[in-house]
Image (spheres, rainbow, N blue to C red):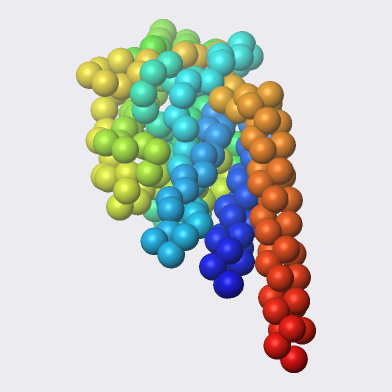
Length: 237
């Protein structure tokens, strides 16, 4: 008699996780470089299903022009590398960069780009090539300030989301391979653009309707089974 209840409880958990994931996707529909999450479920041997993982779907987002040379979008594979607050490296597709007070290229949260790039004061403009080379216009002419490198993974869907639109390496993703934009399997860098979120609002709304229906159906199973058990206990008493 407890089998249907157990299966329904796992179904409730599954539907709840799907609703939470979809809500997070919709909350980030305007977040540049955001990759939507996808709930992966597996069947339990004892019945029902359980959430196995929530992976990132790394399809390309749309390109949004900004005319800011330090707004960078990756067209193709790869992730920007930034120094995270814990002293390690994190990865992101959000290319909204700027200069801090020391002339260092940082992301919107102040995390420094890796490799570190410092732009000298008093320049007359910054340009970033498709190959990731950062140059500044000075009185003496064009000078190279640094080189952006991208990281890629055997399984980018396995990267672990840590908040702030940052991802960390995991056992599932494998170690990063690093290289210059446009080389090998690495995508190119577009200056003056941001990559939009790859969240599809209509798709998320459908997912929420399906998840809510599944949640309600599993609640009804639990109620019906509870009533059946109550009736049997009444008969025995």
